[in-house]
Image (cartoon, rainbow, N blue to C red; front, side, top):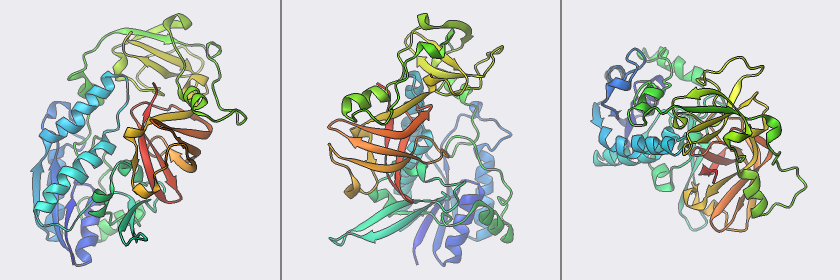
Length: 398
């Protein structure tokens, strides 16, 4: 049997993960990560970290396992919060949950667990791991999607590497959410009916506008409505040559300028918004709802298009710097000049879409079978081969 440290978040998923490991006879230690100290941006009645840590403690007591709280707030600020501010300031939309898994849970937290003599760390993620042997006898760790298609969280782990995955366990990845809650009920765990957290990774529910305004000051600017006929239709038709020049063209957002449209409102800072955003624009009187199709943080202009079919929302391809790519199994990496078909997603819970990955010397491109809505810079694109998550990269639009 192994010594396993479980990241107890105070939610039902990690609670049942600890329960299953204990029932398997392992030595289980529960640890709650305190990642945030500034309560001024926490919505106190919706899962603040204090309540979560108390719930985690009560679960540990019910299971009869040791429990402790570790404070990672300083390094979390450096690696996650500062990164978020910088990305929003640059007009990009970061994904702190992906970074939290790579930089905190399976890095700093893993190191703390190893200091306690742990063989593995376990989390309540809905994903699975498979271990195989290479032809040279090496152990290969594969990341697989969770069995519950409605809860699959493999996307959030798309940036972990082999050494991290080798020490990771996902005890509930073979279960559906309803089964997890049933187990929690059967064992009288306090978290059995607890709502899923919608906040930042291991912080609690955070008001994102308040959070951003701590450092990114409000700055009023125009909202410009761009008519659809002002934009070319730069989509792959299926007949053009697929080369790097065309992939670059298909992956670029439309070139926008205030002179192309009409000022229809004001915003408090272009850096607060994201591509495809519909809510929070404060615009009315349109036949169809407006969506953000462009962000210019230099001119502080927000561009919108009317209706979710507006061509400014769609592109056939996206591009990524090769330096941002993470191949979970390095043997699967495509060499420059190669291409391969995968199933891909560009955001959590998006339906998998058919695409082909093309690699070149410095850039890689995903060319989709059909144009994709709201491809957002700063987010992660992930590609799958069946149930296996093969790799990921940061979406670029320049």
